Image 1 (spheres, protein in one colour):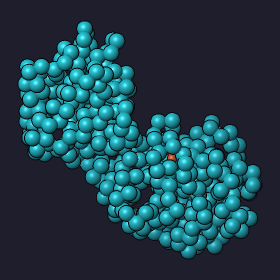
Image 2 (image 1 turned 60 degrees about the vertical axis):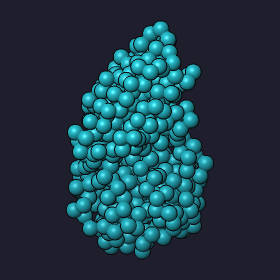
Image 3 (image 1 turned 180 degrees about the vertical axis):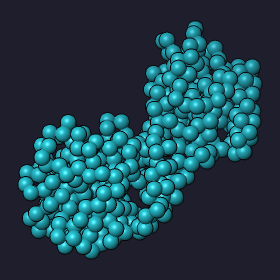
Image 4 (image 1 turned 30 degrees about the vertical axis):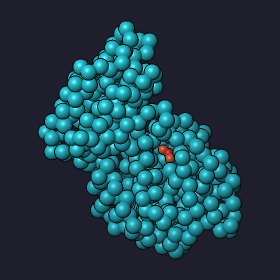
Length: 395
Ligand code: FEO
């Protein structure tokens, strides 16, 4: 993307990847993404803060040319993942005087991943400052947003916080401060949080407390929009990492011949009649990101699956495995399943969700097409979910 001036001598020099459709071969990117790199010109030294994905190195170089940059003193690596570090070797080749400023863990990752020479590094400690002359960067270690080495940088004089993946969003836009509709930014950031940050909820709580002690009026992540109103994204994160739960049941399902679908739809209606919101997601037709976003605050999940071969349908099993890895704050779980000759789907799924500290509500298993007694069992499941939601005060 074109160079954007953010504050005096602070520039966006990154790249928007409009047509990238998947990240880590896992996270779908319906709105593309960006790799935000920032150039900070102090009165004595110039620093480049994060780089871009190697595929977009040419755009970063072009932006540095546009600004007439002939010397870079420091390349700050806040995170070693290659979408931010991947252009560092090219930058070091073009600006041979540049040193990579990072922490010890990140240095080791960068040596492993990019084979950067040991003598190219300046290793900093938590809270250490880098003197650029009239500007100073303070580094604050924030492990697990998103890897164990991640850190953020605070540009004191300009009240700017550079946060790399933390507060990021996968949005491609020509508006550095985001589209006019704030809801689009919110959705993009929530999608990002749900699939990348959610497993690290406990760490994020601590980091939020740490950054709130700082005086800043702009958050500059390394994906998506820059926040001129940082309270907007900090408040959203506070909600997502809090213990607050929605009175909603997520029902991801697959149905091979229609029996599971009948059960799912019946249960959905029974829950709505009790004042509980539902999300019925046929996981073959709904993007994974939608399911992940529902996991951010939903109180309950009910997996709907037919029995296939030796257990649950493989796609539902894969989703249960992912939910288990994302560690949402779910409180309750159940399973509804249709089978022909074997009912092992329940044991299979329960074996996949050991990380979820959920209270398992008696599953409903139906042989073949559901009949009257099966619908009564689904009524009972809806009633139990209602009572569980009532017990935690959300209904
Ligand atoms: Fe955007 Fe964890 O890299």
